[in-house]
Image (cartoon, rainbow, N blue to C red):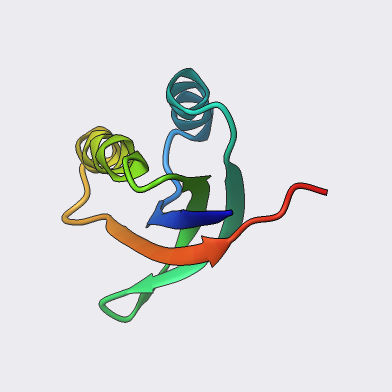
Length: 88
């Protein structure tokens, strides 16, 4: 199947609240915890990965806007790329 992989890169703040919000909006997703760097400074970060059809972009943008406001961030990075998915 041809699908789209979306990733949201953000600072790790209010983890429990964020995970609860994601669970209420998405059926399935993956969270990667990592070190991020913004303007030369290290910050605890996370990447949310969500695979869906092209219409998933609307939901991803809504989530990214919520994260930006909720975390009081200057910006949240969103990427998307076409992927081939096989269910085995």
